Amino acid sequence: MLILLLSCLTLMTALADGSLYAPQSALSTGKWVKIRVEETGIYKLTYTELRRMGFADPDKVSIHGYGGWMLDENFSVPYIDDVPATAVWRGNDYLLFYAKGPVRWQYGERSNVPQFIHENNPYSTYGYYFVTDETPVKPMTSIASAGNGASLQIRTFDDYMVYEKDQVSVNNSGRELFGESFETITTQNFSFAIPGITDEPGRVAFRFISKATGSVGSVKLSIAGNEMMSGTIRIDNDIYTTGVEYSSSAVWNGSKSENTAVTVSYNPSGHRSYLDYITFQMKRELKSYAQNGKPYTFFRSLAARNNVSTFTIGNATADMLVFDVTDGLNPVLMETALSGSELSFTISASATLREFVLVDLSRTFTTPETVGQLANQNLHALPQTDMVILAPRAFVGEANRLANYHRTNNPNVNHVTVVTPEQVYNEFASGAPDATAIRRFMKMFYDRRTSDADAPKFLLLFGAGSYDNRRLTDVWRKVAAENYIVTYQSQNSLDSGSYLLEDYFRFFGYNSGGSNNIIENNKSGKACLHG
Image (cartoon, rainbow, N blue to C red; front, side):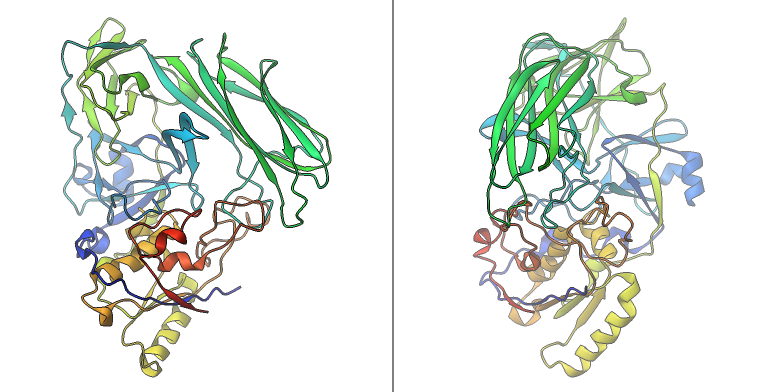
């Protein structure tokens, strides 16, 4: 299917701030190599690997980008433009850097209950970065310990964990995918290894969906045989409803085991029913762990907010460092003190929940996967344009043919620009596929306009689309993504209220929100659409 979107954009009265955008992309000159990571962590590039990429002097190499979190759909939040450099820590013949994968964790509220909440990027299964020797190196700076006088001693930390398999779309619409089926196997067990877990209260949450016309389903979750949550799913008889959710969380009290057994049961059988996720929030002893062979341990403390706090880490050695990665682009090295097998540092009081990572230099680090060398590009330097044609590389020839036709025969079009989705993702989403990158790219022209005459007027999406942007379902797993453009899908993925929204790419108001309120929150960014 060929998706064609032609937008005629009605302008806001006040001009926006075009200075948000760099006049030139960093990718416009020099050698750039694209790399990717599957999960958030600390990654290593040796000088041998950098030379293999084609960099003659690894001491001059820097890392750019901000990883794989989904871009914020609300344009009123701070914006990261282009591909900024991220700070790196250098050893004798290697460098380490903090990289974000496609899963984002935040401490917030779900159903009015404060807890850690995760968000999967619905467009990408990787976080992307760029390696270059074209820009100045950005070494990681250090921050001194706050000294004496701590009001809080931290020897445990708040941690979180999720079990989730995104593999089934029950509606062929919407950004949510689901996991294990409970249609025939109605009781399933899940095992979690949580070394150093304490008996302090924690929290467990899970989400489950079912569709059983004319009946009521019952689902429960137990830990070590003790029922934690149970509820009914009253089925919507609407033929357009493909599932109804049960979502709950509970305080996890009592003794806890490092090997935690979870059981999820559903009744009756034979109904369309799937697990979405199981999440844990718990306290763990603050010490070095060999977690799945990883050379690092992430930690944070809710209690440390607004308190001068000393963190004391057990099982420590002289090979260990602590990075503060609260600001993902500017991680810093904490000044620490080693006393026997305990490593400590003190932070000043702050309302911000700070994120730290203990790094063990004596262990083996993962190397990011090399995607390949980039051709130089410079979308930031494009002149104002009347029409943008977004076309995958295989279609660029035909897209240029269409562009020439408009230049010659369309009196409403003086300037037409043809770009590929990958080029847009590189400069506006740190290399990761993301629908908001396309919207932000168009907003750059909108914000830079000096009058209605030089504002962008038309956007043509010259390619196919899919409800499964990540190619995780059986239907789409073997379909190459190169000739596709990501689609904007609603969060709702279970009934007739689920939708694909092409209009999303033409909403430019700074109060633009997410998929549940995108239309209402864009009253200030009006547009007209011709299909």
